[in-house]
Image 1 (cartoon, helix red, strand yellow):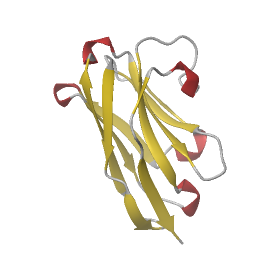
Image 2 (cartoon, helix red, strand yellow):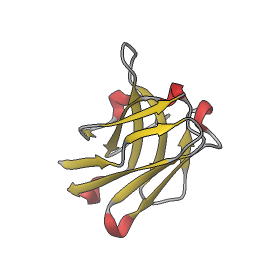
Image 3 (cartoon, rainbow, N blue to C red):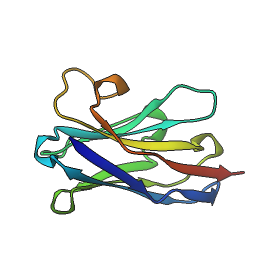
Image 4 (tube, rainbow, N blue to C red):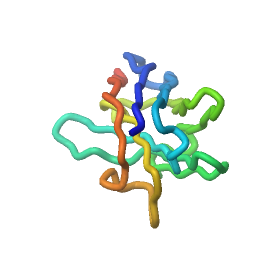
Length: 125
């Protein structure tokens, strides 16, 4: 099993920035990719970004391209989500997730094996 712990959420004004971190522990050697998802009140959990654990391949939701950047530090077993130019519609609980293997796309939360507890991001207008 892989354990995930997110940090870095908070309250920020529109146009501001936040960086989320997700530290992985446990069977980290089994990780194939990691992703960030978010869930706003009354809405389904949606894909934000993903990164392969052993390559530079990254994937993004269209609405965050150019504003968000996912990266990783394998030595620290940590994945980051740098969020710039934040908008009120980015307000949600953000979750990181890990998958041991995936075929097809990375945007389906059902494919992920492990989840963090979530961190709240609130963007005020």
